[in-house]
Length: 451
Image (cartoon, rainbow, N blue to C red; front, side):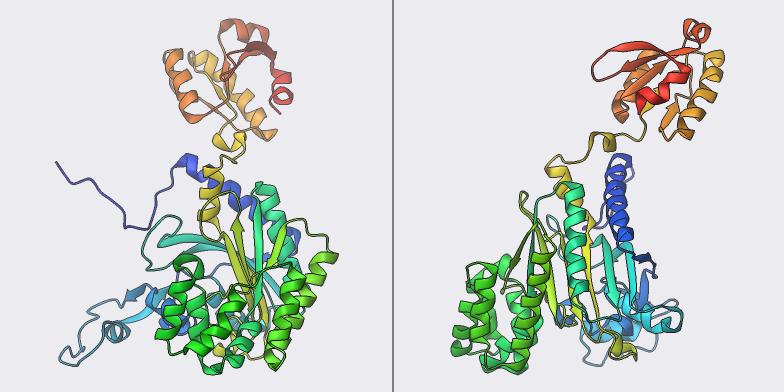
């Protein structure tokens, strides 16, 4: 017997029932993006490796999927040289699968700058790939739903992202907490602990605090060259508690001698004033341990956690002041946030929050009792579809029990039975498969009843 085929670890097939749920998520998020005036773009799955490398930090570069050059890619490579695996990869790979949607977006903005109106507000819903270790809630291929505005440094953009997050998760009925910090605060922290050159090392380490715990973060900071005195400055900040205003005032005292740190404090204070004025009902809190390990963030950073389901962040993002500068367009500040559709799906599924109508592709199945009966159903089904009601006709004339089973397995809530009596009455017998109740319904009344 031939070996059963499989797919790579960290990837998933999605059958019809899963896709109905995923489309519900995508449609909900897309509709909210449109409400705020964002426009859709798409970029290729592959980017030039030079576009991707060096944008995500040391950890991110390790997770890039590199695409082997076509033809005999290894010809001309001198394997007698003492080359690392990464050095070899760079000799035989010119392209890579995109790691996120933000760097390709920055490349797109630079490449198409003369065609765009700034500030440019875009959304993008596409898959990304990371050579990560697969585990619960972490996949090698997954979809991101990104929304960014570039060409403006106004904090009103950050406020709008918070409002978008609130609207999306309110519609999905998921209780979340929005955590906010500012990379300038972390830069100030690096200054006052005596290691301004270690900002990346500090952020990479503390970004793991939820995964590995505070003690392991301390150990990693020591490995990255910080001393115990520096850690003694950083640790209390990571443990700060109190209200948002209390945290902001306390960090302002700690960073009083750091100009960049105080810039971050003023930005986060202004943002929280805007949030309060906007009447945001979702829980929003200052989290000074939030780092977001990606190198390109320079200002506000966000992370969103589901409150009722154990999983990693379901959304994250932040401000990047000069990501386009890497590609030759300096001083183009942007800010964005990304929704993790796969994790959101897991939360909705785990909490059984998908609406009942999402479980089925069709609302009603028309039975097939013979050629004449099927012909009667064709224009009726067509009329329902024009009314916006999804329906289908069972294609084969077979026993009714089999048609019941088909509807039940697909989660179709109604079966429309049509026999000689129904044709004579210009009606259908509409059966509710959940309750077992059935009634004779005139053709002209079916659409209104099903709506």
